[in-house]
Length: 220
Length: 220
DNA sequence: CGCCTATTTGAAAACCGTCAAAGTATGTGG
DNA sequence: CCACATACTTTGACGGTTTTCAAATAGGCG
Image (cartoon, rainbow over all chains, first blue to last red; front, side):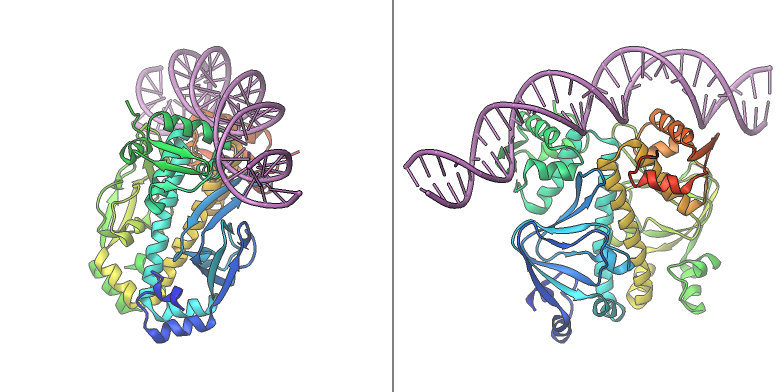
């Protein structure tokens, strides 16, 4: 299975081992909007995104959602629940026609115990996510919407490039604000000539100024 | 070195291995308020808290601080930077007279590669922290101060017991609000008979009601 | 007691959320 | 090709939560 062989986590494995994983893995397709797993359900597989895009969201009792992360092909998701044997802490939703490969928990944990290199890769991935997550925590705790939005746009552009295919509502759910406030703030950024907008898309035109805004400087 | 032997991460190691780690480890003492490491500095050691208490904080350009986590004796900290070989993403500060043990990065990474059990423990720790962190993200993104504070108190009581030795300002810096707002919210909770207060201390008297508040229910 | 720190209170203003409504692109079916 | 449905975007007014600033009160320790 090419997806497994090309994955960052497993890229150092030999052909027989990849084949072993491929034998127990499962390929599933999801249409847009469909959920791969739901917050609170029991995990028994680890997922790798093959094609399409996955967003991980947490629901609030009040009805508002918060987007924890977006994943691109090649990335692993739903792993925290697997390692801890607790219910999924969030839901995973396909944003478009999407293909995922999943590996049973047992097979994966067995692999981890036998191949320290794989474990080291996992540690690197988790470490990076923890760093990002704590950085966002700080932003949400003490920064204003404008700076938080700049920070999110900066982060997204590092992952998706300068042209970001997200609606105002999706950006609001990542930033921890409402659609209306996101719109008003985006208009501010547009006036500062940091971004340009289109329907369902935002293009970053001044990455350096965006970074300055994300770091709390005010543009003259 | 007893601290290493008793640590969750290393508890399955044999006596010779513990001795090997102890030989390269370093013991340091810090008075209250002193920093063990600073945000942005280069990591070369992994820290384990032996005695006292450590708080991990992120500074904002605006001067306000945010407390990412508190650690008790036996816990590991500063590890994300070690795994990624990037600057520390936050600072670690002793809150009282504190003793830490540190292991050089190289020795530790070598251990990881040789002992998959150690790596699995690390993965479990990181996974738990990532889960906590994402849960707090959601709180900060969409919940009001009262619920966030209840959530933080709930989390702290799971770790420190029902009697929490924190000032209003410390709680504010964990909750992502100001000291004044924290005080006003704490007074609300006191009126609901969920907590009792003293100078520099908060005692939880109705844990079930606190949990309900943290989950977004409103007490009748 | 006197000092230092923590806690409390008050009033005003800023920021952001909420609600309601209208405008605008995109695609679909006739 | 046009009418229409749909989803995304925008705008305005209002109100609530929280921050900010300033000052007063109270607990603990030498």
